[in-house]
Image (tube, rainbow over all chains, first blue to last red; front, top):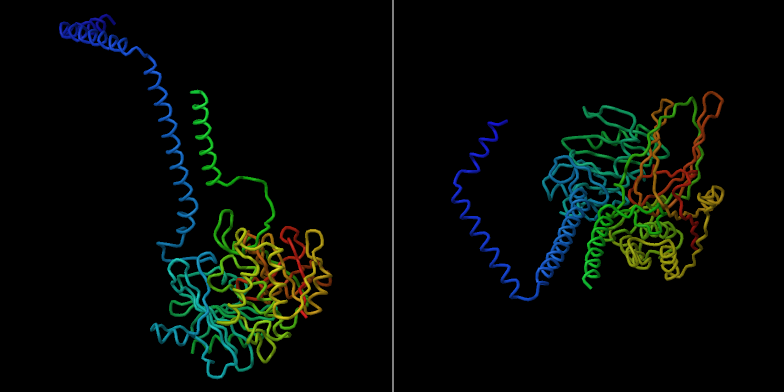
Length: 232
Length: 281
C-alpha cells in the first residue's frame, strides 16, 4: 500500500514546474473572462444561451422522432407488404392485392403463336357457342401471371381453364387443392380431380406449367377425358 | 413566457410521438363492424386474401344433401381492371346480369346467357361497362374506401330504374344472421340475394367418395365484402341410421372467382351486416 502511495506521489511531483506554470496561465485567463462578463453588464446572456440550447434540443428531438416514425411507418406499410415472399424470390404466391384481371380477345391458342409458348388449351374455337378470355396481370409490372379461358364444349358444358407457370401460385386457385381429392395418372401425368355439387375439378402439372379447370358436368369420366384431350 | 414556450415545445414533441405511434401500430381501438365494403385492396388491418382458418374431416356412412338454387345460378363475374375496391359494382353487375336474361337491355346489346340458359361468366365489352356504370352510381371510393351499404343499394336501384324497370330490395336479415326461411323463399322465387359481409369466410366441401368429407374454411378478406347468394345447401351426415350432423351453407358468387364451390355458413353470427333479396320487374 505504501509502495503504491510513493509511486503516486512520484507521478504527481514529475514536471512540477510545468504544472505550476499551466495553473498560473489558467487562473489569469479566468480572471480576464470574468472582467469581460462584468463589462457586458447583462448576465442574462448565459440564460439566453441555455434557452436556445433547450429549443434546439426539442427541435432536434422532434425531427429525429418524426424521421424515425416515418421510417418505421414506411417499412411496416410498404417494405414488408410489397416484398414479403414476392419480389426477389423464384416461387411466388400472388393474392388479389397483387394482380388484376384484364379481359382480352387473345385466346390461349393465339397467345402461344404470338409469344412462342406451348400452353395446352381446348381447341373448340371453331364450333363453340361462346368463349371468353382473360389475363391476370401483376399490378406493379403488368406481367402476365395467369391465362384464363372459359369455353363451351360441343355438348354445351362450360369449361373454365386457368394456366400458370409452376412457380406462381394464385390465391383464387387454392380451392382446387381442396376440391381435387382423387388422383389419376393420364399419359404419365399425375392428375388430381374431384366432383362435388354439380361441378367437376381437375388440376395437373405439365412441362413446367400448371393447369386448373372445372366443368359443369359431374360424370367423373368426363373430367378425365378432358384432361386426356388436353394432354394429347 | 419562457415556461409557456417550454411547455408548448414539450407538448408538440409528445403530440408528434403519439401521431407516429398511431400511424405505425394503429389505434388499438375496440373492434367495430365494417361499414364500408371494398372486398380487396391494400390497407391497414386487412388480412391477406385466402387465409385458411379451419380444416375438418367428417367421416360418415351416409350423406344426404338438399339444395335450392336460382335457375342456372348467377353469372360469376369478376372485377374488371381499374375498378379498385369495386366489390359493390361486381355484386350489382351479377344481379343485373342475372335479370338481363329475363328483362332485355338491362345490359344494352348484350345477351348474358347461352342457348342452354347457362350464364356466360365473362365478356370483354358490355359487362366491364356495366361495372364501370355501377361503380360510379354507387359512389365507390368517394366518401371513403369502397362503398357503403346504402350507396350500393341506391346505385343498383338507380341503374335498374334508368333502364326502365322497377326494383325491389327487401331485407331478409334477422338479428345477426340471414333469415333461413326468407332466404329459401327468395331463392325458390328465383331472386338472388345481395349479402353485405363483415368478414367473408368461405367454406369448400370436397368428398373423396370414400364416405369422407373435407371441409376447408378460408377467410377471403377481413375487410367488408359484398357477395351474391344464389343457392342453399343442407348436408346431413349419418352413421348408420343416426343423423349426427347437419351443415347448412349459402352458395355464393364471391365476385373474386368463377368457382362455384363457395359456401358461407348461414348459422355463423359474425359475418352478416346486411342481406337483401333483390327483385327486378
